Length: 269
Ligand SMILES: Nc1ncnc2c1ncn2[C@@H]1O[C@H](COP(=O)(O)OP(=O)(O)OP(=O)(O)O)[C@@H](O)[C@H]1O
Image 1 (cartoon, rainbow, N blue to C red):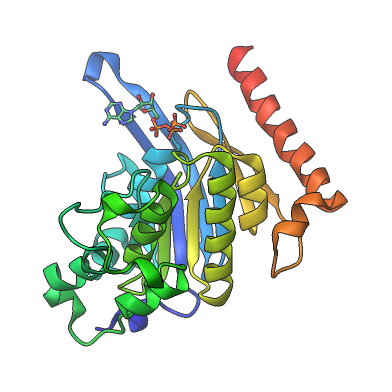
Image 2: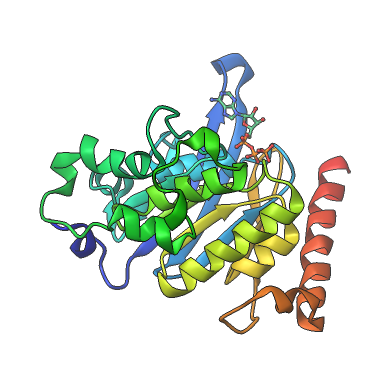
């Protein structure tokens, strides 16, 4: 089975009635409560919500890293475990986690070297082309320690694309960067995604980031984590930096902030 054939044309991510609790039986805490969500092929969906509402937990369930107590997750109609095994899911964590003793190019090549079985007969991305697309063509032979934090994170994103996964999961990939750097990285990701449309689930705390990148924004409420509302971002694409200054962008910002405010108030009521 090839990586590209794995995903049915009408596939994407389907999360249905997922619940997850942590802790011992006498002190169990429900973190996700009956969460349902779909992400269509080529759709960019951000998940935003108060700290501790279960965003990362949801992302890990979709990645197949932790198992839900109940409910199902399918990717292209297949159970998430099968999709994860087939490397149909790319994952970008908060920290770049590059190996300091390997060059940037060798870091991006690494998943191909350690997963030879999953690679058999599937479409793969060329690591040096990916790095060039992410503006790191000049830095391929450098070591991670010689790169800025933003460049390291871009290399980690490039690495997540080597299997050309149909689904990309990103957990606050730019949260460790300062605002200017962060904006540059987010616009870089947007550029890449606009010509490499994947289904993306993107966890963030930043309202402008969610709006700039997404087709839809899922707002979660906390204790327990539930989907409070889903906001359509109907700004035309391709988007670019100038969009931040438009009235439509500011109007959406007010809507998302209003929803976040509402879920926080409800949590303290
Ligand atoms: N493995 C675990 N064992 C016990 N509790 C956990 C575990 N993983 C997460 N939690 C708890 O679940 C809740 C949700 O955590 P999660 O990291 O998913 O939230 P989040 O919305 O991503 O938070 P943040 O925005 O602060 O990153 C938190 O209260 C956390 O302490």
